Image (cartoon, rainbow, N blue to C red):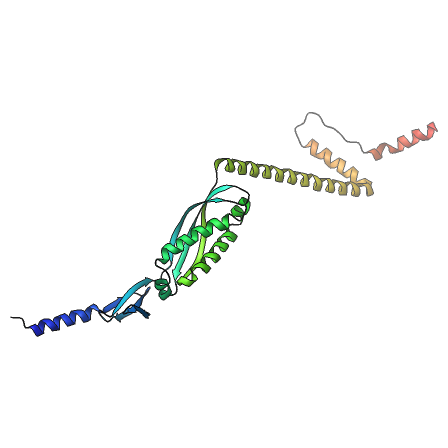
Length: 252
């Protein structure tokens, strides 16, 4: 027959063992003693006084959370859908338990409203071209809002910007026109540089008449090297200039 004392001892042992908790390296335990928060414990083995103390586990690892697509009207009145990713972690376990009921849900709501607000203050071109700037603005505002909760927002990254079909076609036409403009500018710059080089070459040939004759002979050599049936022989004007000057003298 089991003695009552033995039963009492077994119950005490079980109660004492129930107060031994194991907290992982990435966790902290917020201890409440008779309803009052007395601090955090862990990691490792900790002892919680049964019926007097209770513990709330808080995960300190970085949480990756999707921010659902938000309907945003940019400053230039373009309607877009913007989705993002939020990275945050708890740095003050006590505040994460006491200051807010659900810090994960609260951080998500703050991130959604901030994303809509910041994207609504910029134009579409700025939203597409300067995404890093928008990310930094959203991250800074959300971090300030969640700081009293003991939450640190490390990064906010815009994941996708969904444009209406007509706006996508307009951007495509704009990009095509920009490429054509660049092509024309490059071609014009090439013509300008070529004309400058030709002008420099003409100035050199004008100061050295024999250089022009050598250039004629080189052109003749190039023509003769091809399989043309007709050969054009360029005659330097210096060769016939004396005859022209003599005829002009006789006429006078």
